[in-house]
Image (tube, rainbow over all chains, first blue to last red; front, side, top):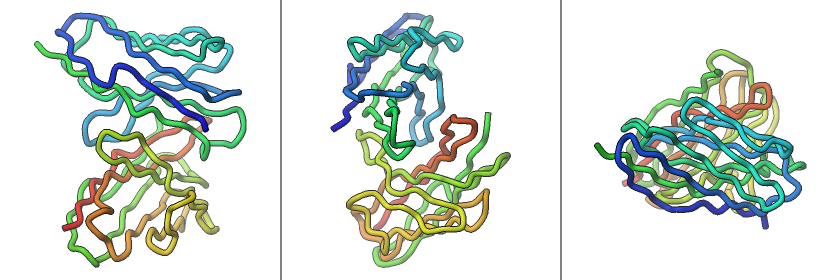
Length: 114
Length: 113
């Protein structure tokens, strides 16, 4: 069974600090890995998408890395802002099966405090 | 980016009644849309794939007679929760695909009392 595990489950950091969120997956072979930001009571919004051949992808203060050999990804947030408070979800798409086989992580709940 | 909307954003209904949730792709056409359910502190779980002009495909364990899906046009899919029960209370999210990118709606919070 394909699994996506994220850590930590929750995290509290001070505004302006950096943080790194982790994602381990078992999906293999996989097509791409995405990181989403989900504000409370809202739908997920895409931050980054990486194919299996990419190692890193940036989107402003968000930088995602991917190690396909160890099946690990991380999302690094630089100079955090209060608006970064949200859940961050790692999503892995298999090489076959289409969007019906996409596996979602539970997410890491990040709280940025002043 | 593409925009997917949902209506209503939240709804409270009594047990035994039916509730309809709309999902619209505002600036693109979507032959396929997806319906997810998300319980607190859990991941999104795919309920069904909505196909324009044909029957929806339901995931294992999802009752098709309880969760009616209609994809009547290229920009609108509806999910009707029939004979709702308190255990159906959840956050329902739809998504649509544009150029291999999955766009999610803002979600609908359903509370069944």
